[in-house]
Image 1 (spheres, one colour):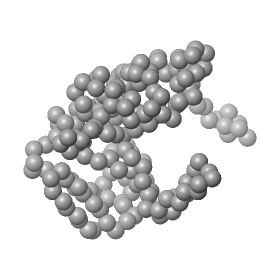
Image 2: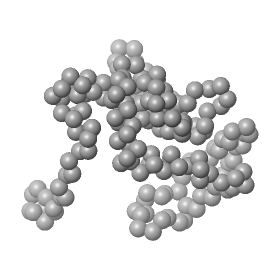
Image 3: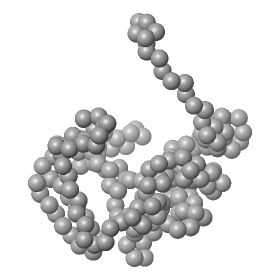
Image 4: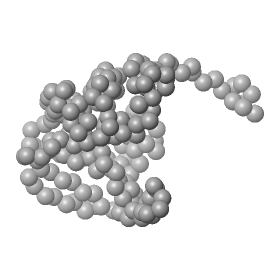
Length: 183
């Protein structure tokens, strides 16, 4: 029954790159600290904040229930004047040490050396991080348009990955201006 009687062959897993392999080993004091605080380190590199239209919290449980629409708020690529960089904005800070400092500032009990090592790992191996780091230079001038074509999808992509929106509203926020478009 398993694997269709041997007809399904899975590719071998690649070994984890360093420093992730060492951090996940659980052998050293540093790796034990990392595993005990892995959610905090994960939060250091989040690009969006989580939200929902209705979150029901129970005082006696460390969980919550979501009712309604779930969303992820990306925010602007740059912070407002005199505001700190948060979430995705940290990736656009020019100085790597400032990025590490900002990530640790928002996540107590994290260690700079671990955050720095993970940041280097993502800079080297994560395509999405590299894409965002070059986004500011590739941003068009003020005369650009966003076009959503629900009837089109990129070549060689799964047809359901680019489904049309299931809600009847789209919101767009631009720095310095407020626009609301309804479909």
